[in-house]
Image 1 (tube, rainbow, N blue to C red):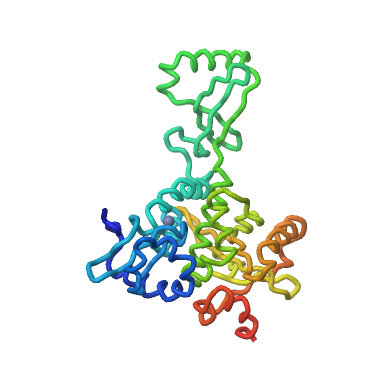
Image 2: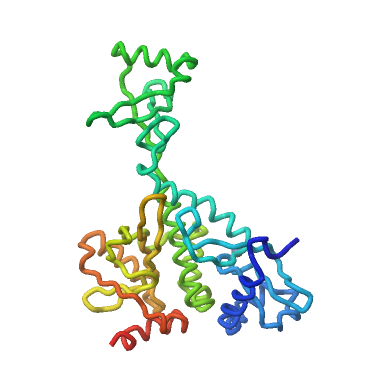
Length: 331
Ligand SMILES: [Zn+2]
């Protein structure tokens, strides 16, 4: 087994060990149990634990890289939506998230990239006969303000059931039709954005965030053990409107700090978007605060919130430090 995949260059894994190992070692009670029975070899102080599962690890020894799993490079946000950060995660976690991350690019392309095969303005649609359940793939075209539904020429020539259906339709005998347009799975999109926001927090705050109570809770959400208290994406904006600060910020309401907010820049082939994810603050009430914010945001206008980018000088000092020292840095 080769521990590091071919897309993880020496410079990348060296940099990961250099950056993240120092933030790991004070949490030895968390990671020592996963290293057993290798515990005697980890005194190298060159250890990396997968931030997503906190179970798989690799470390550098004089004989090369050792570990308990294969690792590869993960893009944050996903590569399919233009993610530009790269972080090493274990292959198992990377593969697992690929499935729900695919849904995010589906959403961005929804309606803006037509289904060329069926010459449709929608990505994929079908007509269903309600009484029989028969389904026919179709295309929707806009034609001088009216909507036309068309069927594939080959299918019209060879599919007898479709032929019969079209005959019925033209003679006025096809009733109770349903138009189905495949829509992206919002639950998966929420997960994809939350995962990216979580990894951005790891990039900034290292293992202090990963091993925090809230980090643990977010991993439970990603494993579908619990629900996230705030619906993400909370806000969507075109990046060029500059409504939200880039990167990691603090959300304020009536001049009181509420939570962190991570703005993810994502794009499809023609447009840029910002999706923002609320991340709980590190206080005891941080997680529950998100329930309150979610409820509030649904009832009131979002203009009552203010967002502030956290200065880069504060960020690398950790999750709690960034929360506690935001005010002094901006005054
Ligand atoms: Zn993992």
